[in-house]
Length: 254
Image 1 (cartoon, rainbow, N blue to C red):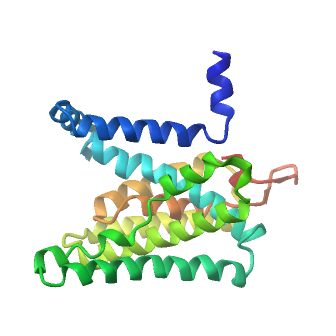
Image 2 (cartoon, rainbow, N blue to C red):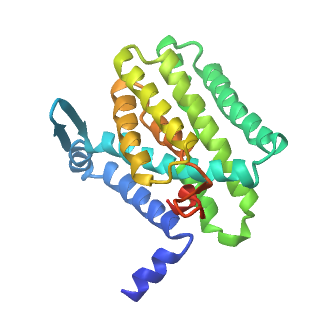
């Protein structure tokens, strides 16, 4: 038990687990275990609450559910750095912003250069525009304190801007069945979250409840649900005051 506790406390623990599970997934998907692995990924998981019905495979719950939580945590860190850290000036945030745009445009152009003669393949130009932030940060965390925090923040900001851009591209060019009702509910939820922030509400449960509504509506809208995680993160206040007038930070407590 002590070994497990010590391992969890290590900064590189998540990266080590990520690499191990990736290797395991590659082995399973490229051996005789592939059919069983595919069946496992597509196990149906259903949630039904009254008229609300979410029926997704395990694969989609990871992509749309767990990744939304991951982007919530990344968004919280980026917001803190924007307000009081390494991204608090226009000059500091300009570099990852420009790098993110380049990280979308250049791979798309290279992809089109190789697939311009194949109309079907050319339609996949948006695939290389997204950055795999989990692996990028995982590799950096393996290096521990030898990597400056400014580099990690730069990569987080780059990846989150890059992924938001990729989500917008997918929504504009690839999504054919957008749900206007779900988008309206998502916007209303976002407005309520902004109002909570404006009034200095520090109850994290209030943000999470409305955030859940935001996530479901974004999921149902046809837009990638990770966008809800980022939006929720940016509405949670960095600094506020409790009933006793003491300064608290809901963002840092999550």
